[in-house]
Length: 382
Image (cartoon, rainbow, N blue to C red; front, side):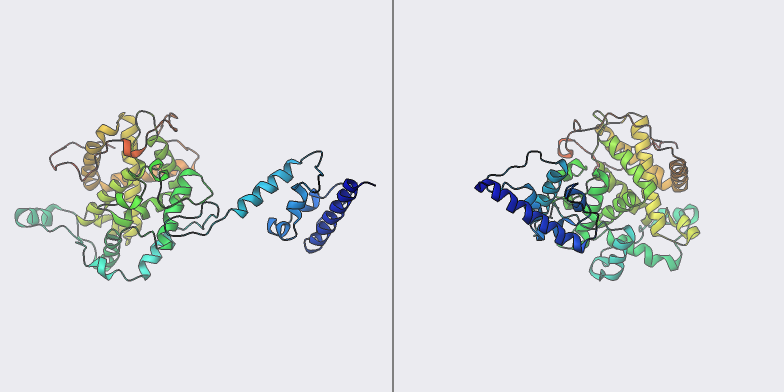
């Protein structure tokens, strides 16, 4: 028997011995006549690596090459190479191969309920200060004041809006990663800075720069939108509309503006009646945000709006939202009821989205804070 033949048999015996030893720890059907792959399918890939089986199966040994490379072997090798390339997170560069755990809205909210926010709370103005005739008119004809027992919850919402994005805080990073994964369908984390955030509708590579006037509350609202199964469908519909080749708009930046409108409605007592009725603030605020975003998407789609109309659409939306919050909330209820019945595309957005939509930095976007108060007086009807 020649040297190459001896090497082949030695390599084969080594692999068979390794397989049998691993299979002893993971009892699976193993038959030498049918090959080792059947026995390897249910064994964790880490165990294959520890016993050197993966490399023995796929590597060239002493000039021997397998006649046929099985697809399962190649797939296993690719998976192991991906595991080998995992890097630990450092600074703002997240691991792109080791997926982090998603975070729920309630878990993120609990974080803010337990940390010290006293320095941020000092900055808030819970209500709009009115004087003279404006104060008298609001007292006589305006909405009711928020019940005393709900004001602490309102103040928490406004305090979160004063908090910025801190990339060094693991919870903040998890919120960003969850939003990214839910909107894109990715199973892997991404860097906390980078051009991929522009694909989601931020204006730059750092989402923190777009949270002016809304703070971390803007990210919590996006998290709320994507972590509920029914509102996730709505978020994905609006996201697809934002990538339309003509009607495109920066999705996340638009969401930040919706959060700004929500904050103003809360401070002006526009949501007080509904909060008093439900004896809750945060759920009402979240639903109002979602309902307002849904209304914007409906107007944008049906009235053929483009990015040039953004400031005026937002201003009109703010007027309607403050004047008739209950109507917006009712529209959201109807939409979600339709989603539950399997009506998955109530916006009727055309499927003309995709990579042709430009980055947010290439769009001239006018937010609700960028228009003078007299820019628009009209309202849209539900």
